Length: 299
Image (tube, rainbow, N blue to C red):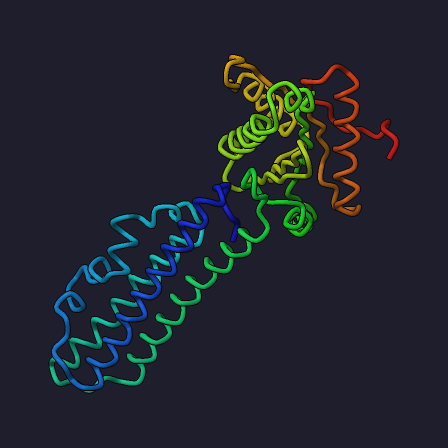
């Protein structure tokens, strides 16, 4: 499951919400088992037609829409399994009320749905925790620890005829920003660039902080020509972003880009190096431009 481009703050909120919702669900399951075993009258909310919306987990999932989690690919699957589990639970409870013996098949069906739901929730939890561990604390984008493993996964898709473009982005004359406005303002520029880039790419594209003022962008299912056009559009938009330093007015920062295809036949690090060499040339050609790697550039 791919982690969407959201900030570490939103991920922490999402993780906390999910943990509380899971606790509420476990409490509901314990009550259900007690009702079935002791032949107690069921909660009316558990036997109705819309029961999956009425439990505490469902109220969080559907009414708040999971807040920070609703863009996760696995979030919809949690909803599907949760609804199905409640359908099976309602069937068991109705049988118990009517004095009809519960078959092993029906009980196993409920237990299997319950396990699948827990698996989906645990999967999202692990993904969130793993992403938080590997996020750059300043900008909220994944760091280099996360980068290589994700790019190697992407390279497997490239081997199956899914093109991928890498773009190395470096903020132009960033040292002068720190010198003139201070490091606190420089940090805000880095954060602004990272957040804008994340927000204006597709959810399945990736942005990594490579180091300092350098970022690496991974454009999946994108050939080099299309990738270069996307990056050039991004370059223009970033150059127009306004930043403000107290008492020194509005200023703008540009960036240079080097792009290269993620080659399926060489190490990921060499493809990154190609994008870096193209970036070096973009700097040499006057900055605030995009240069694509080609074979004339010495590896």
